[in-house]
Length: 424
Image (cartoon, rainbow, N blue to C red):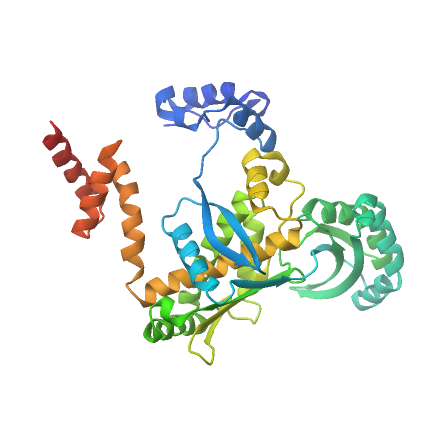
């Protein structure tokens, strides 16, 4: 039990001092929390620079998805995830897609939007037009904040002004449209919005409140398509089953939420591995799924004239190669080197291809043998470890669980007792 969560000056301490403080406050021993300490002291120092109040680091498995060919180029794709079957499913579907040329992808220019909210303007519609009249002044001031970005061909390109009707008030909202090049872009667009606040307030005749990017990055879409061979998938019935599952997701938001989570299993794993913002990408994706006014499937499936499955996916993909954890975390840097990508747009296309592959793999499992067979088979090792198995015991226990077809912790504990009794 925590004696007190009030820890004055906690943020000023070193990671080791913070850990000791937490031990004292919780009454725990170092052995009970020691797992939070990374094996490499340098990683702890890096973590301490990345966020506040660091006491340790959480290691997530990093795997490599194989078989991907995207726009004619082969990739080995790093994926950071704790969930079994994700990497295997993506790799498997990538091998099926290769039969008909792999994945074909495209993406928009790396455009991000920053919103500047004005409240209290006496004439919202007049304020909207005045802002458009000063478009050039607004863009010039924005670009003064980041001349290097402008030199690279990016920078503020346009504005859009909207009137948002809220309860009891009309808000004038200026969208600053910025080409952020190879960055995710949050810092760049937020800096511009902050600098523009006084000018926008003066022009609109109201008070500026929020000035921050939007994660609804619908001007920065990535798209991918693939043809999955009918016979390699398991035949006509499996293809029809995948399409039936897709139709279910289109029609039912309860199913769509899980369907899209399958897409994000692949996408989030690559976003995390490359040091990009998983929450921003997920927010943009789920918002896009509801763009019609009703939450539905992000992906689309149909059959071609030969009965093969055609899968497509289009969604916002705000990722970058410069700034943030991509440049500060050594594993993220290694992942980017492994990919060999040359632009944020290329990275966006790769991530979207993995999302489609992962979605197809999940739907194929549902349409064929059922999702649990493959998933629980891979999950058996985790359950064996949770039961206390170590070394060679892990494989022995996992094999027995899979053979029994019942992957449960209590059963794993009984099997482990039997394995140890037999060894003794």
